[in-house]
Amino acid sequence: MTFASPAAGKEEENVTRGDEAGGATGVDPQQLWLNPVRSGRGRKPAFSREAITAAAVALADAEGLEAVTMRRVASQVGAGVMSLYSYAPDKETLLDLMVDHVSGELPTTGPLTGDWRADLKSIGHLQRDLMLRHPWLPATLAARRTLGPNSLAFLERALAALRPTRLDGAAKLEVFSLLTGFVAGHVGYETSQAAAADSSDRAAAVAGYLAAVAADGRHPELAEALSAPGRPLDPDATFARFLDRLVDGLDTD
Image (cartoon, rainbow, N blue to C red; front, top):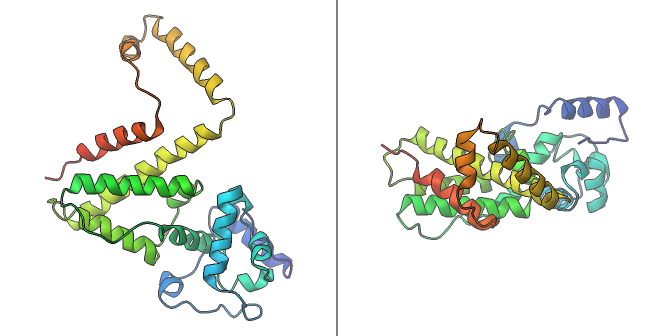
């Protein structure tokens, strides 16, 4: 993903190299979330940060993250490219804004049940629903450096759900990270499978291959596992089953 700047070739080269290297410098989190100010580059912006972020999210939802360039976002909101740098000086900052924007869709109010496992599973389902609505989201989470207000509000709810446990603060944060990583990985797999045009043919081919391997006598454990009755390939049920195993297996002592 490249941010194109027609006004400064050298600047564009630097931004592009930062993107290809896996992340530019970004901005200070306190400046970004608590005290946002204009960078002073370019003319005074005529559009809000919210509108620019929403346009970037819409592009990512429709066409994937590769479509989110500064030029495309500017054209969506009718702004000059350079004016957008006042709000997002690099790719990483824009991604942080996008992640927090969609995190605002997550509910953060209402009473918890007091059953921390049930509440944590509910949080996992909410995360999956959000990531399925925004398929680009799982791939961006691992590289995020900072949490915006919407992300923090949801984290606060998750920590509140874990209050009945004996876990200390650091362990609670680890559990939330583990849950989020699991959901992101699972949804990433789900969406990649759904996007494969030949998924049914490929599944049949893989099944045939595994059956042949299991019959060769050198993989008795695999043969026994494959001989067990299969489960319906329902994405919701599969996720719920995996989530149950993860959460029910957590040790809180």
